[in-house]
Length: 373
Image 1 (cartoon, helix red, strand yellow):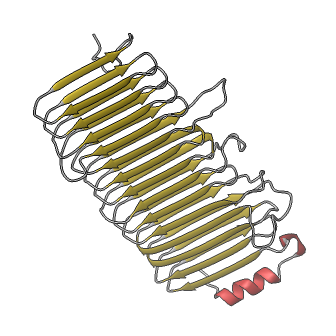
Image 2 (image 1 turned 90 degrees about the horizontal axis):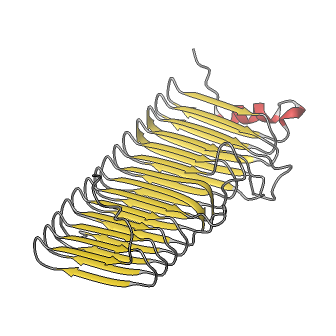
Image 3 (image 1 turned 180 degrees about the horizontal axis):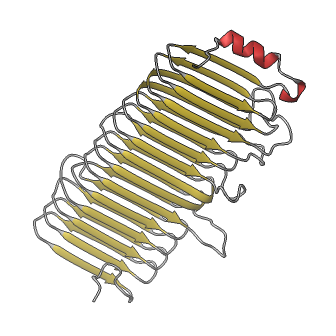
């Protein structure tokens, strides 16, 4: 049999705890039956607030360290579960109303799950995580291992999943001040994964309003920006931004993908600094098109527009520095392949008909899109 304490009773117990509690505060309020709440605070300056209503909700909060972490958890609905673990390496409080880690989880609906793990804050900047789930069967996983990271996940429809990882669990100093925003407001069955490891000052925004879309963003290096918007159904977007300059990441690259239609695919890979990529894919209509962008050189620019056609393919490879490519496709079954091996080239391809093929090669090298022999 579970013992349920009202919020005032738990707060009183926390205030009457022995001296080693070191100014920790815990408030738990539960209304309903068979609910479970576990709060374990072994550090100092921690604050935990849990409110659960109706039945079968579960909340577990574990906060360690002396910098102080704040957890605010509010669950309304059936069978919700939230686990928050926050640990810091700060020697003392950051300041008035400031915490090493700050987590907010609000779940309204049925069968939602949110797991938040925020680690070290040895750079004296707050990790901040906000998870809001309003539909049924949503999942959210957030891992932030270093300091100054900011994650916001909003899921208002059914069957969505968001997984955000910022930093490196084995190296608390290898990732800080990253920003991730995942919004899944309408449409069901969407998945978003954002992975920022060994990275600094990166920003990722994923917005999914269609159904059964998948977005995967991987950012390594410094100051990379990725913006993904999916308004169609069954689309797939993969963005990989990785810059290596003498072993130190220095990205400053930007990728924007706007995807509509049905069953379209976009792949963007930026491996060097100062690249720009814009893909507008079938925003009004159009199905089964592919845009594959690979930028290995520095200072490249790519714009791909696939507007309203079906089964178009746009393939761009920039190996040299300072290249510019523009591909526009509005018909059906068109294929454009642009290979820029040397530096400072410009290419423009426009396909308005049906069944056209365009091949542009600037410089010499090996075609990465060629099928294996």
